[in-house]
Image (tube, rainbow, N blue to C red; front, side, top):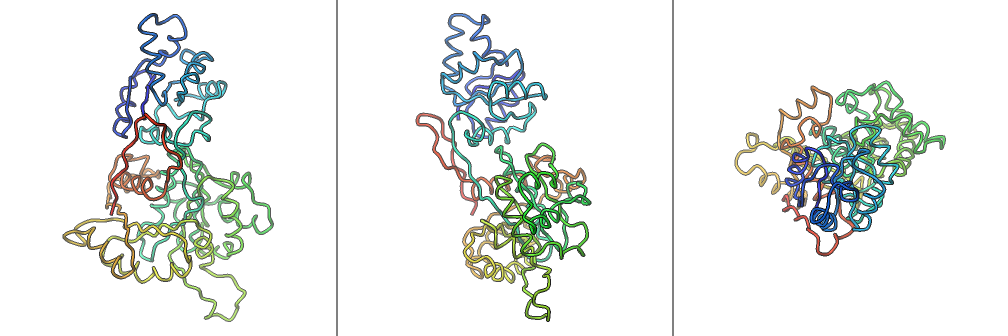
Length: 418
């Protein structure tokens, strides 16, 4: 994508966008476009700037009263060039809305997130032309017993999916060891997912109610439905309730990530009360409702063995629902030479899994995120863990539904991970 960066001191933003694979035509002061339509530039300067605007797919514009006007918007509209606004405060956001611009990004936005916003759906953004990034509406994150990293992957997956400007819901449906609220420093005494489940039983859960009982995760675009704060509350998450609440989530968020417990055991045959509540009902209901299951395996001998033993039960539960396998905490010390190859060959031989993605062991970044109670993507946006998960999302989950315009720069596809 060809970009014109009209931002004061925009060299850092431009360099970050170049690292994301975008083509930067020029970096100009924030008021350069206003100068074209006003009295600031004359003769060859005007023609040069107009040519750059016409050639660009989008203009990254810092919004203020000195940089945007009806004439500037009309100039870009006439050249079929999209304006992507950057706003430093609420006043700038209101100004962008007054001119009908798409939802703005913060002035200090991470270049990776800005690149995803540039490639996001223009229909959602409010104008322009570009590809439409699609993701499954409901994604369940599952893994076998032994803490392979389900909750960490759930949080980071939600944050990455929200980078393109989507509204993403993050649900903690773990009835054995809920941990998302604790990991993110959120109050777990609030209503959360349990309240949504109770409301669904009476038909009273909708988008407004889900927004009320959820907690926004900073400025990431992720709203969190926290889990139960005591494992003894698991009867509140019955199968009927969970199914109804997740159905409502489809109309609330563009994509919902659900963290579930490990056990998919059905214990109806070993109890006398066949109509009683089931401890694993929430997990089974979420897995059956999901459009996609991300199965997390520990990338070590014990983790792989546990995964292979539990994987057939997962398959029996979800039927034909697609599964993406993610091997977490990969390190050569636990497997020796060719750690990736060993995991890949083992899963293919014993479970018929032909495609595996890998996340490296990155204790420094993960520990820093836990210490600050924030997502790893915010604390260490360029860490090996974050980049590997971002690649997984881009290659395996998010798909582009429309080609770019002919004659424009096309971003090269990443090489397969396996």
